[in-house]
Structure formats: structure tokens, C-alpha cells
Amino acid sequence: MNSLFCNNHKPFSFYIIFAYSRDGNRVIKRFAEQRGHRLTPIYVDPQLFADAPVFCHYTSEMYYRLAAHQFLPQELDRALYLDPDIVAINPIDDLYDMDFEGNMFIAAEHTHSTKVANLFNKLRLKTLNAKGYFNTGVMLMNLPLIRKEVRLEDIYQFIRDRRLPY
Image (tube, rainbow, N blue to C red; front, side, top):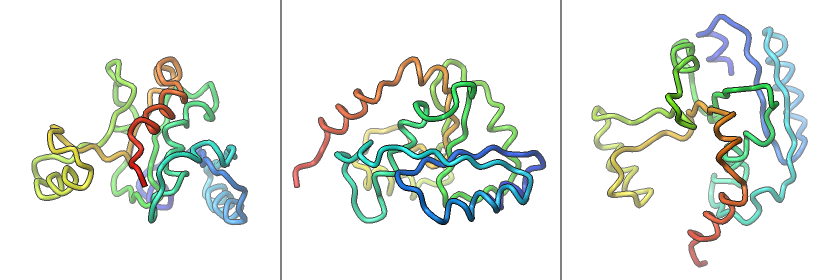
């Protein structure tokens, strides 16, 4: 958050989706508000993605970005999802104002300058035939289109169909 504040000169509204209320939420909210920004915690049922695979640092909360359109205010037409470990080193206006051109998402692609990382990610994710790798830690969401096209039941079914046996 601080990197956004330092490299952008406009107020932000943050929405953080949690399964549980935490004391740290008040600290983060106060941090944002003292700098002229707004933070709204959104609490969801902890069972939302209870059946999704989790391991190591991949928690069930990592899936909340897939359901964000269900919980964000209806008046929002776009939202920029950022993983908590993202550091913004430039203004985000150009990204945030991009035309979706009918797409649900705009994501950052790893390009030819990162061929080693691209190959590593293809091996790691078992997507050897993929044309590229998109960083799902930075995604601009077209909320009206996602709300129209994406159903949570379809996401749950996708997870069930591809769940690895234990």
C-alpha cells in the first residue's frame, strides 16, 4: 500500500476480503486512512473455498480473487487486484485506465525478456503448451462482465474436476 501511496498522487479505495476478522485489519485501515485513503474490509464465509486445494503458502484466501466480483460494491465497474507482496514502482493510471476491449481481465504478462522465468513457470504450473505466463497477482477486473459471465458454481466445479488425488 505504501508503494502505491508514494508513486501515485490520488486517493485510493481498498477492499480487502477476509474470512476472519483480525486485529491487524484495524491497523491497516488506520494506516490507509491516515494517508487520505479508504480501506473497507469485507468478511466472507470461511467455507467459501474450503474444498479448494491448499498447501504451503497457498491458502484458501488466495482464491478470493475469483469471487471478488460477488463481494465488491455493485457500483464498481473495475477493480485492480494486487497480491499483498506487490510493490508499485510507477504510477498505475495507465494500467487502471486501459480499455478492456471486451475482456474480463487485463493481466501482466511475462515477456521475452524473462525467458528463464517463463520456462520455469511453465514447468512449475505444468502448462508447457501455454503461449505465455500471466501474473495473477496483478489483474484489472472488468466487474460488469465478470458478474454477467462468471458463476461461483462453475469455479467450484473446475476445482473439483481438476483436484489431484491425495
